[in-house]
Image 1 (cartoon, rainbow, N blue to C red):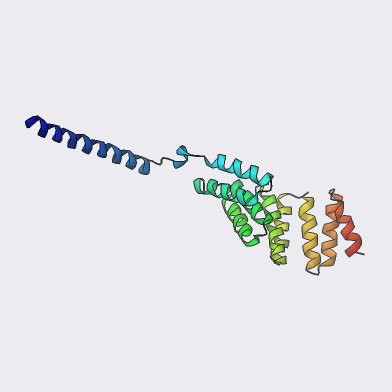
Image 2: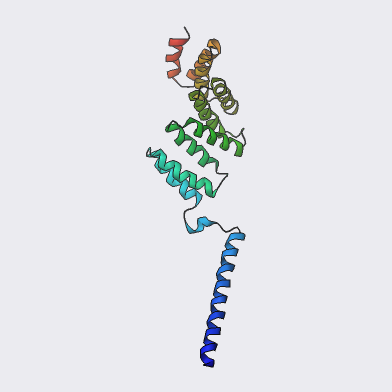
Length: 192
């Protein structure tokens, strides 16, 4: 009888110690900064997967994977940019604008790589009929990267739409000088 009771006591102590070890492990992972991505994909792996889906024009799949990357790494500028591009391709211009804004809030706006973000955000603004906002973003892109033909081209288009014909035609001419030959086609149609 005594042995049986001792076995029960040993079992309770063993189970109680196992529970304590389990809880300590859980608390360690919760409070030690342990990354849950260790059990699954990393932010970079989700980004790479999203990028592959983007390249194959699976924009919804790209957005899903890139969103997971952002969940794991909230300051992932490239992920916000790529997700904005995917949303833009799906005509979700408001969602795209939010992601471009987030990318610009994380990375210094005078960084040369951000000229592309300003250019693309400007195009989204044009799609949302924010012509002045688009023109402003193209101007910011040009301020960062002075020989940016696409920025001159798009600012020229925005200025023509804003009835600033002279300034728009000058921008289109500059885009042409910088190698964007389609600017000359628009000059022939709009600037004569």
